[in-house]
Image (cartoon, each protein chain N blue to C red):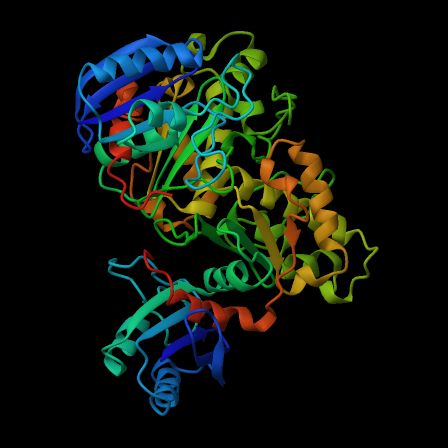
Length: 288
Length: 288
């Protein structure tokens, strides 16, 4: 029996399934206090058997370097009660025989989309999510990338769209990518949420500008064969193709991966990506 | 017997040594036509024995994905005679028993500095080189990163230094990082080469601005535990510390790896990094 957990800031999903990403049974519960949440999901799993491996995609910041002191621990988080909680320890106590693999939620979703979704069969994939914040998951050479902590893609800086003098909403960096192009940035710029802005509104040219420059940074640093763009804000009609046209323009024919079109695509697994990714994590043989 | 080859645009180095990076004997020769160059170095190696593994750090663009059609082949290069030349094939013909591992020159140097040099003992390292162009090698989770082709770090775009209206020198992108901050960009901006500009010249504030923003992009995407900055332009006195001060300012305390100081360092292996990296490539067990 293989299990997966998707630990989100407000809801948690626990599932049984197979290491190739097929969900057998799943259950959704609210994310409350850590002991309570893990108590519930451990009970649910115990009734179904004893997992040999558990893959976890979790909200962050979380330690994701196996062998590191912080592996599987929530780091400083504003979510009450969760700072320093050890997911690895909670699961090892409940299921001592199980191998536990922890990842960020966006990396788990990236793995799912790369194996079974919008980037099926590719070993070099990035997945940008745009919602309350901007983040990215990265699969490189069939391995999920962490670096010394995990990446914080939303906080890079890119050139301003000509004429744009919006101050930005990031409390740390004001006009980083997230500060200029996240959902809250759009709402602050235009006085209404992205979902209410029509397809011909100039917001989408601005959004395409910042996304194209973010994608260019990914191309120059990790050269994905395809980039998935998901999250609430990305659902605007035509945003992917508008962004791809601009990315082609600013890259001036320089980056070979762009020859595979479409290069910027929407995710296809929807809400299931996280839990499918959790199952697939258990199939990584050399994860680190 | 372990061998290494550093194939540069103008000179080539061949060496025997050990997989932990110790050079036993080395020979430098000019890089001429491929058959001639490889003829010479194969003869030199044959006189010394029969290598069981050969690590190669090569100028690019070169195919570096094992199993890919282009693995070990020079791609379209302006260097006469080298486009489509297969390094793997040339070495397999000469030494059919040898395992051959091919990498970009900057990735080989990155591995050397991470194992024996300026980032000794770290598994997450980036190495920015600034000279005629700007490039970066990336070690992430103890593995060298390629992506779908290899990365082209110099061609990302970052915000302009306030007040900077220099057009940039990149023939593809004008004002990409390389177009604004490489050696030729400095020479075009100020009318003289970097080496002749004094330490208190404003060029170094401009250079620190662009390097700090490039380093921020690496932090946000691959989160290195340390970044090495090398290459001719980087040798200006004080440039590393000036860039680190600015990087700390623009990142506003957000990136944990920056707490390890100094974060931006000079390389320590000098001209030997490439050939040492070639030897170390033969020690990678799961290279891909």
